Length: 134
Image (cartoon, rainbow, N blue to C red; front, top):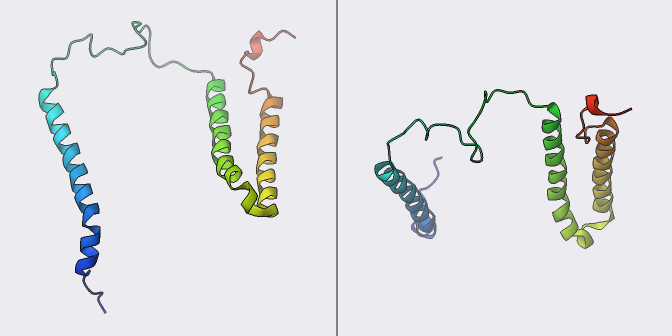
């Protein structure tokens, strides 16, 4: 059996959302068209060059980076996510009970073990292995 059409009160109560969406889409469309019309379209060779902090680019942009930069970035993201998960846990700490407290401790312990592993492996060192003095 097909469902009945939405009632007038339902449509009236949700019309503000539809009006908001129409205004947003219209605003974006008007701005895109306006900026397409008024932007300068004279491109010179200097405008099309890569800009790097006021310095003229030298060499190729295709260079190999040391993998440690990526590992360090991944580690930062991992521990940043840790903070994101621990903040709400800390806010409701008194109401969550002992089981949730233990779960939080297990989460912190897993991350501490991961940090110890990465530290022991030497991935937090910025000095290249070739430059280390033994």
